[in-house]
Structures are given as structure tokens and as C-alpha cells.
Length: 318
Length: 318
Image (cartoon, rainbow over all chains, first blue to last red; front, side, top):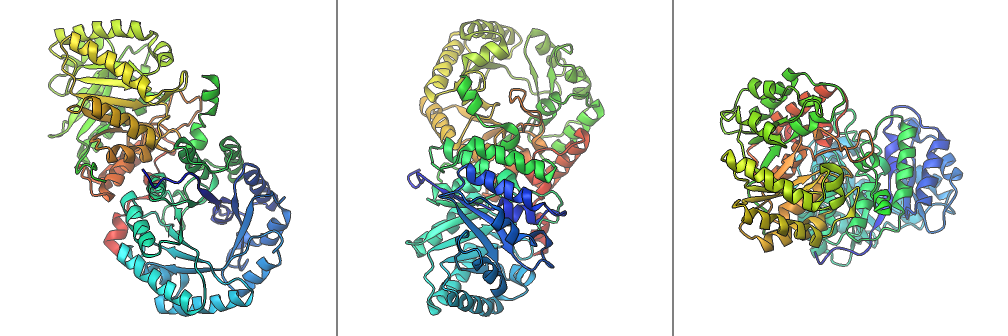
């Protein structure tokens, strides 16, 4: 157990990834209220909006209003997503509130690239080269390399560690060629293919190949292994995780309505705290934010801890 | 990862523990249909009924009818529960269909003993001595030692490894004194207090103290750590687990309606298979049984895999 970290940093993606998947529009005030509840609970990093084409993603037509509406909490980093120069420009308009950083994104599965990004690997190399230039022109040379479908793909099937490593090698070569200094990898399992041994193998391979770089895990709980996979990551020394309060969100690729989405932030915090790993988050306050998320969405969300409750009241009573 | 077993045995407790907690009566035919679906999926061991006082547990007034109604599947062991001589006598009436065995039960938390069994530790020692005699008179000398609240207790708070070991020592002394040959321990976390490190510590202590004996884990997913705790058990070489299809059941101690219950059998099977550990179970057939359980109960059950779906259709298509 020697690689267990003493502290981890969670990036909350519920407001961005979770609300986006809902069929109806979520009121801007609700989004703002949830983000403020999360920052008040001590969440250190929150992805608050997506600057995307409102015709394609109508749920984020209010991205600017959300960012303008939140009450910035000292010590909390607010981040946003964008996929083109126009989105980056909008995000830069909130440079005082948002922590902006450039990112390179690839998929370990070519089938996923073609289906989700509408490009093959070569096309994605060219598109990323262009996006790097756009970011560098804005003074945001990419520091993060994100690998989608890092463990498997609903369209392409199994993804081996060798296949994932090969795409990372190509991406790192592109980064070197364009002068990007990558500081961390994000390994994403948005379709729920990872298992604990696969997490150990891929994280182990990445750390062995690039020992100085950070690794972040973006895990989904589609098939119930999300927290076990996070445990495997912790054992490998991973200190950065994405998660979504209440298990907000779902999986647009699952082909099942009601399929679970990201691992629930409160379950990850509970796992960490019970194992003596710090997060800086007040778990009971986070659970209150999860209850708010459930009220906003109006149906039972997948987090078990949200419905089972924390141990704090039992510990106080004992 | 050297202690990972190559094969595990799952005891399905959904029909017994899961149906018991439901407020309305579940039709006998539904109970039988679910049990038969589980055995057809290759479940090696199913707890099918509880021979208890129907005035106290009206949901099991039909225990005899359920046992009589199932279609025994070769290779599947059917087990039942009872808490007194009368229940044992009823179960013995089905000696041709049921695998009967005697069991000694203690709680690691005295507060739990008092609240759930209505006896302190000394009272429980006396009661168990009497039950051992009843079982031995029936030719069923107890071979299993079950420890409730092994990791923590909603009424008594934290349970340390030392506290759990002390109760096990007393129980093993009672077993020796009465001529019981204990073959396996069942460590139960019905209130959802375990975390992976605690599982490793307690299982490690038990295995070090009684190296020849088997260890079985009865884990609940009350707070989302159930499958991560199972993973910790697997890493410690545990080969026997209880689970409930679809995550059927709840927690009568949680104080939350809708709190999750046992770990979902299909999530445990999925975890095992993805890690190369055999269960003898057909996961897709088990998922069909989980869907049946959800239709019987008439509300969304907590299993994520049930709603996320297995990977088999994606693997076939790839």
C-alpha cells in the first residue's frame, strides 16, 4: 500500500458534464446555486461551464451567465471547456474568474475518434496541431494531454495498454514538436470499460514511461466498478480525479437511458477519508450539495452514499 | 496482486434478504421464478428462504412454499436461514432440497447485540451455547462462525480490528468447548462501515490467527464502497462472498428509506470476470435475472451494471 497518496485533488464535473446530458434546460440560477454549494463544501476545482455552440449543445447556451453568476470562493479553481477558437475566446473573456489552460485531446480508440470527433487518428493529429497553435497564440500552450476511451470503447471494443501507449507516444511527439510542455495526463473511461487491474497496468505503464508527469483519472461508474477503479488508481499513487456530485450525468454512449455517469464525488471523498487520505472537502456539506443536485434534476441520482448517508451522525452519537 | 484467487464462490442472498425488506408481500411465484432464474444463470449457492415466525417476518410466511416450488438445479446449493429450534425443524423437513449447516453468530459491537439480538455479549454466549446443542442434537454441529457488525455499527460506532478479534476469540473458545469444528468465518458489514484498508486489516488478522480457515465477506453497498471493499477482499485472497442480484434489499439500520443494500451480485461477477477470476456464472443470464428482480419489486434497484449493461454486446460487435 506504499503508493497510497496522503492527499488527492478532485475536479468536480457535475455542473458541466452532468447538467449537459439532461433533456430539459436547467435554470441558470440552479446551476449557479449548485456550483456555489460545491465551492462552499471545499471542492478545490470545479468545471463550471462549456463554451460550445448553443445550437449543438443548447444546455450550455447560458455558459457566460453561469460564470458571471457564481460567487468565487478563495482557493477554488473554476475551469471551463471549449472545443474551438470561438469557445476559447469566450472563456478568455472570464480570465478573472476562470483558470484557463490548454489541453491536447486524443482517443485511444480510432473508432471513437471517428464517431465522436468525426476524424481518424491522422485527422485528429492535424486538428490538434491547429488547436495547439490557437492556444499558443492566446498564451495558453497546452499543459494537459487527455486520452479518451483509454480503457475500452463501445464502438471499437477492447483497448489494450499497448494501444493506449502508442496514441500517447504520438501525442507526446506532437507536443514536443509544437513546443508544448505537458505536465499531466488525463486518462478517461467515459464508457465504463476499466477494471482495477487494467487501471493498474495503464497507470503503471504511463508512470514508468513518463515518471515526472502527473496522472489524473476520469472514471465513470457505468457498470459499478468506478470506485473500485479509483481505489486501484490510489494504490498506484494517482492524486487527481474527476468526479460528479451525486453521480450526476450519464453516459451518452451507453445506449441505456438512466445509465450511471461519472463516479460520485461524495463516494470518492468518503473512500479517501475512510482510508486517511485528505481531500480538503467537508463531506457532510458535499452531501448537502448532492441533495440539492437531486432536487434540481428531480429524479433519484445514482450515488449510493447520497441515499445511505454518511457515518458522521453515527460517530457523533456513539 | 499475488493473493488474487483464480475462482470465487458467490452466495446469492437477494431472494432471502432482498425480498424480506420490502413493505408489501412478494408473491410466492415471483420468489420461485427469481430463484430459478438465478440457478439457471449458474449461481452456485442461493439462500432461498427464512424459516422465521411469520408474525415477526410476514414476508417469509411462505418459506415452505418457496422451497417446495423451486426447480432444483444440479450443482446449485440452496440454503435457508432460521434462528431457533422450530425454524431448524422446518428447514430439516426440506433436507432433500436444502443444504443445511449449523452456524454460530456473534456481533462485534455489543450495542448491536443488545439492539438487534436483545442480548449482551454474555447473554449471546449463553444463547449460542444453547443453539449449538440444538444443532448438534440434529446432527448439524456448527461449521460456520458469523460476525455481525464486524467493521462498525450504527449504534456503537467504530469497531476496531482488536474488538472484532476479541469477539472471534471468545466465539472460537465456545466452539472448541462445545466440540464444534469451525471451517469458515463470515465477516458481515450489513451497516456499510467497511473501507478497503479496514477489510485488508481485519481479513489479514483473521487469516494470520486461523490460517487454515476460510473467510467469507458479506458486504453492503450502503455508502458506495461495496465493490471496492470486495476488491480489497479479493486482494487478500478471499474466495467466498455474499451478494444480492440487482442490489436487492436495503439496510434496515440505515435510517434512510431507499438506502442501498447488499453489493449487487452482477457487479461482483463483472469485477471478477474482468480481472480474470472465475465464478461459474453466466453474466448476461444473471443480468436477465436482475431485470426480473427489478420488475418484481417495481422500482429502480441500486445496481449500476443493471442500468449500464454488460460489455458483451459491444465486444461481439467490435
